[in-house]
Image (cartoon, rainbow, N blue to C red; front, side, top):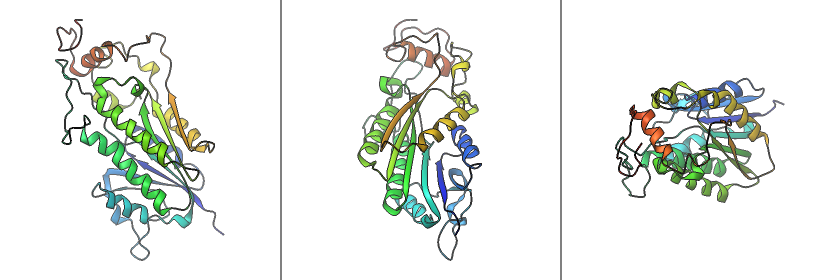
Length: 281
């Protein structure tokens, strides 16, 4: 009798964290990885026309439209009888900085006026809920789901309002829907040293005192995820991961120094004066 395999589903597999998770799990015995990426082939190209199921092999595919029905159809195409356990890792999302170079707080793309960027909410909350709720609905095997948060979330910085409002909704969903057969985890992380992070924050090391020595690496995060998902004691678990910077001062996230440093690193502004709600600097 063929031994059943564990299935790893990674959303956002082409990002730095997704790449590291793929590298780790693809080398794990009796493990199959399904990667979700908007840059890959349509999932329809992989589904067996006879049984309407996905192959028992590591693949990366794209879902044509990001809506509930599409994710529901994806889950239905998994041959659950071939797997002993499913681990879903959500490494997908938008982390907008919502302070402009003049110090004004603005939430863009907020059609429903709830103070949250609609794309941020969709990628982080809706997609996570779509996939996990459908896994729980159609699968009878054990599931473990994990999403990434930020260590700044508890401070609720105005500059990242859309993000922490969204992740708060995710946490409430996880706490309410996790159970003994579907355990849910959140890993709050600090900055990760990777190409994408430096591209999106081009002046972080030239205009500020940020030190990459204390940033996490994608490989470290992947190792931590693997360890968290091996645990079975709690139906819901939240942990944080960061390196201690001896120069870090308490209160950084709760005063305006955070916004000043971010404005410097994003907009290449060396001297900041008379911003709408920031102190002179």
